[in-house]
Length: 393
Image (cartoon, rainbow, N blue to C red; front, side):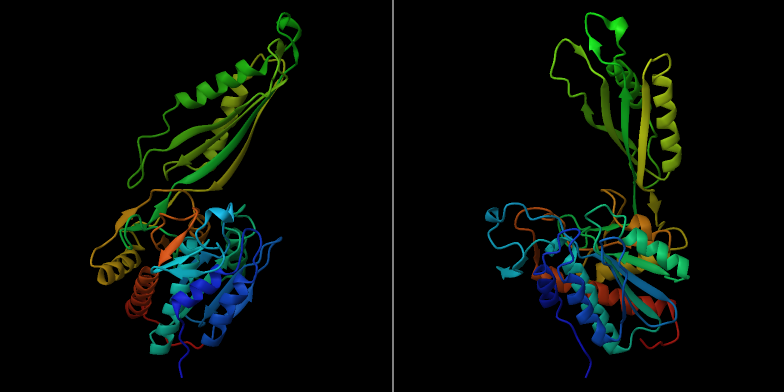
């Protein structure tokens, strides 16, 4: 008898695991226990203090992967919740709990869809789940590390869906086909502390920092890129920490973030920031430096390019189950898709994200069922479209 999975029950079981980054709290064990009986070869891939799971059914192509994360953000004050955040309570048609929307329900939906597709014999290639415990944290020892390890091993994945909650107001209204890149920089100017009445005996770092920020803000990065909004630079912090009114400070710091479209590379922006930092400090008695971290490059899975058939397949699956096609979007923040793009074409699709990271985070039970139906249709149509010889798990 075929093994099937109730997506709502599995989602609730996952929510009951308080897997606040970096803790796993048994979330991956719960998922592995559901996938193992289906014939998935489950492999734990720990890096640092993070546990991850790569589960694959089949050995041949084509290979469709689902990626997601079981880690969640802290719930905040539990007294503010109307239900315990890790109870997995179902009330008034909603699964309530931290991670219900972002994104344990999507993981459960794909697992349930995979079980049904396998029972039908619809998988004539390979299916996999790439699940991390480090998406809400530093994102160093999770998907980034897994992708690097799998690439080094020669693992081939043809296409991937990330189950982030991309829908805006109703399930299926938005499909993410790309994301802007993200760069963070800490700008530090070290001067010489002194009395404000004797500026010749000091070196004030504040004017240097002001010149630097002004130069950075003066540049219009671009006017947009096909399918993307213009890149933007934001000052997120300016810190001097000087409580006195008669003291020239010794240090001034600022932090900036740039969200950039595919018209830029992170390394080029980093070089520009460092060059402007050096220019702002010309003639200054102190030192200025820029510490830059690129957390992800911009990417686009072009619906008119080589991966267009895959994008259309998912869009058609969404339309068939919801009655309306999705908007193809590149808006929003970053996700682990920025790492998976190094392995294969990737898109993102999942539940409505209106309650993610909020008190009383929730997912409608009906939407979990519909999402399962969308994923199931995608799996069926994917292997019907791209073919492949039947493979055992």
